[in-house]
Image (cartoon, rainbow, N blue to C red):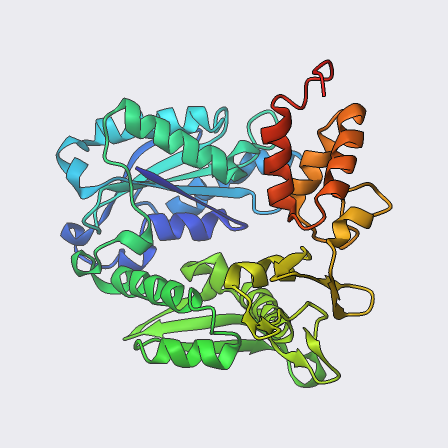
Length: 401
């Protein structure tokens, strides 16, 4: 089971869609909708203007207070084809009522319409987002609550967990719905490619998959603004909002801007500074590959980049963030830090070593300082291991040194 939430301003347009007003002149056997329940609504189906009357009844509570955005609530409840045999009108209505109660869609006029134009059973709930008491029904806008409610109902009634558009088998769909899902799947696949960093690239990638994407503008001259994007496959076209929020103009602009900035940062982090061969353009260090004819290991290079001191033969090498140059010493520079033996001044220095030193009692810090001065050739890791081996439970203050 899946619940899809949408909102709108027009109750009449929503009811026209749910009851397929465009098919009124077709034979009765082609009718693909059926109203299975309602509350507070006059349903004189077949009479002139019956839709207008019903829509006004659903809308009535909204007229008792100041206007709100998108007062017309519309939720579709979709079920797996695997549950088709169980989905009688009575059982579907029972599920719809349970869903509405858990989503606090109560004390408000509504119409529930079942559709039979798709392989999977589904129904639509149209309701007023202002209840009979003039209060706004807010939980219906909570997508996380919707997901939790659907999961709970699915589990308790042993229904098949619904799948999203990305996992649907399009070969089982027909007409416009098949084209829409194919566009969603293709657009999602294209957008997952992080090398797509602008609109022309995105558009060309869709075209290779048989999808046309055209920007639709409103206004003229200086007032010309991007309104939406029309996605087309075959003879079916859809505005961006029908494909998904990720594919609207504003969402694509944000995503492409983020990717361009990331690509620029990545380029700067991997391009050597022409004025200083020891750093990249963004100031991050470039690890040396050898020293005195000795190859520096990949592990040592990573430590160096992180600001740690590395030992190559009898030399200690570290990156100086102030001079932006590597420094070399015969002794371990960690020993001579003003902040205490074992606490390097360089940013990004070994966090494990700093934590080890900071975890000692003052008594053991003094002992460790003396220990480090007696063993200047040890690396941080070697010093920690040897100190632990010599003094055992070194965190116990009362332990005899």
